[in-house]
Image 1 (tube, helix red, strand yellow):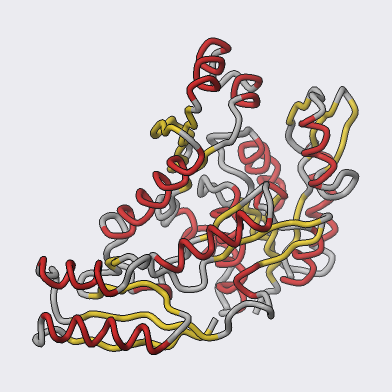
Image 2 (cartoon, one colour):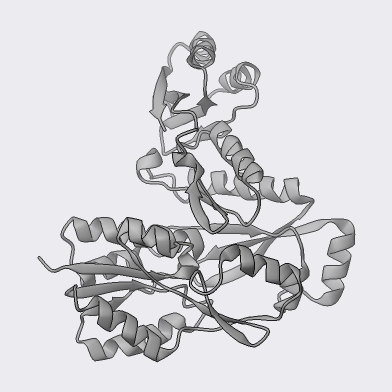
Length: 353
């Protein structure tokens, strides 16, 4: 069986330290700050980058030099037979196109995946590729599957300030000025190769709610054939505080998500709060099966008995209520639902986090 190296770039959010831990190889993306060249997570930490942004530094992105890509691949091929390279979306940069062109000189040993991913979805592609390689798939087979499923992802983005959208030309100075005064937060969407404006919200809290509500709607419609957490991943990427990340994790749990992946960086160190040893180890949720639609009386009971926890649909015939730290509370909610409609199949599921 061929030895396959899984490679991506730092737009995936995978740090060099985490890549080493996972067994994935990360090509650092270059950028200029005040005309000085830096390599992400190599010559400048993420904290230093955001500090320079706040200071008003002139930041320009660029793609890796062809020579650096070739050197990166040649080094990997000393120890591996094939490479699966997962660059950032071809719709957001010419990095992918350049990689495809360079790979033509490698006689099929380098398979460049153009599945139009970025950030957490690009990261998930790298993890999926690693799992497939470990399962015995060839580099070509991995590329074909990742490209076949390229539209099976959605990204929603909001920002706390319009300053950088204005600077990047995605927002006019007039619109930025008006939006700042009115507290308008744009919600952007990445689906496939396009970054589009999706919605506008008044305030930070409303913008986050728009993203989460939309994500749940997409799960219930476009991804309705998925069978729960085994088929569906949700991740939240932040460039803010741990407190905000923990609040997001709590909110996602209330909506029934299992182990929502919340990633933060502190002083350059990666930390996944869903795997934090200090976090709650066992949680519970109420699962309802045996029907494709819940009667209104059951929905009313859930609203009253499970205050603060939302009802979500996962697949065709599975509904889940919340994520509870206390099993007794979950049992009470389940009992109330059974009393409202004895025909439903109800169980309290224990979730090991």
